[in-house]
Image (cartoon, rainbow, N blue to C red; front, side):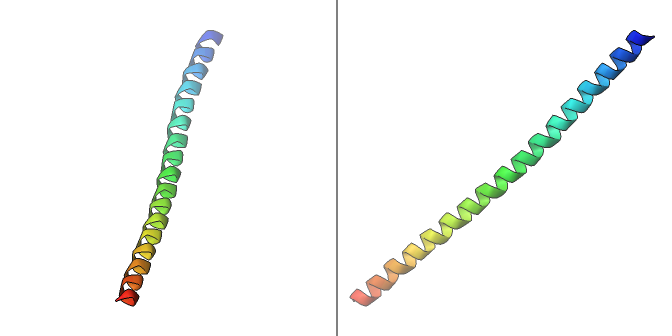
Amino acid sequence: MSIQVFISGLMLGILLGVLLCYVALQCMNRQRTRSTRREIDRLTAQFQELFRQIDQDKKQGL
């Protein structure tokens, strides 16, 4: 009887551990995706500002 309880608890613990790891990895992946999007948005804004400055310099030079 005690071996059956031990094996049942072991299997339950392994399954819960796998589920917890899966959820944790999903959360980490979502966080990484958000930070990547923010970085891309920031770089895009900097790039657009650079082109605006170049256009203004061209207009002033003409």
